Image (cartoon, rainbow, N blue to C red; front, side, top):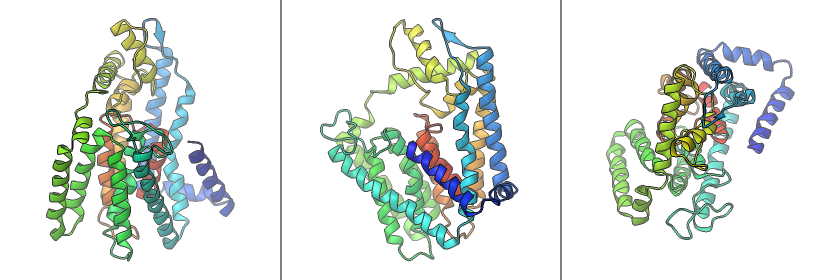
Length: 377
């Protein structure tokens, strides 16, 4: 997280140094554009409902077994990620079309390089070994991101961007984008994220039917379905897919958050405080002193338990708004027309969010802010 924060600070510094007096003017001009204005107000509404949930939890806390959550207003610090895309967009607008193309190439190039690292990590464990249960001498492709589910949520965006770039008619080196997409696909598979194994083919099939020329649609769909069938026959894959480990603990957390919603249906128990409270609730429920706890492992239930109906409604509006901005521009012939790819990536992202809370993970939020900035551009 530290290098990402440093990167954000360096960008702000560069924007100020380039034109000290015009940053405010450029930012306000960006807010006058309809997509950016819409995004700003959706983010503002979401931030307000999260703040309200913390305020209500402070004056009317919920507890179990004598333990109560203690909201900290520092929790709202994460809200800056919601507004960061607007400043990124200002930076992208200051570049020429050729410079923006260079930035896009750099993003995909980094994705390809780290994908190679992920493949090597699966066999060697370097730079950080996270063993795959049931597989000796094989490791999750986590790269430098700490967890395989982080990679599963982040890499889908450059993967689908690279996939869409293979359809750019004005770019000559399209085979290189195909290679980057292939390397990324292998790394995504080697994360051994079971939900991703289901969600990613869904996204690929949607993209193939939507984006490919008619003569390629059926072959690509057939290859995808045959690959899924072949993998299902592969013993390590099938063993991991049907492994019961983690299912019971997730079910407990889902039920805990539904209980929080029943207790605090309007504002929830406090944004991102389901992590603490789930432990207290499950220890009381099962009469134990130590238990697995954490966030809800489901985006919708995390918002429902933490922020209630108000926050969940605002979050759903925010998600639909982000997708809507892309969908409106899907057929425009822009300098880098990869809207369809990002739309497919968001579909996979939200399918991943059925078994994890990827929407509030800091590393993932940086990538989300990045692709939202391109969407606003």
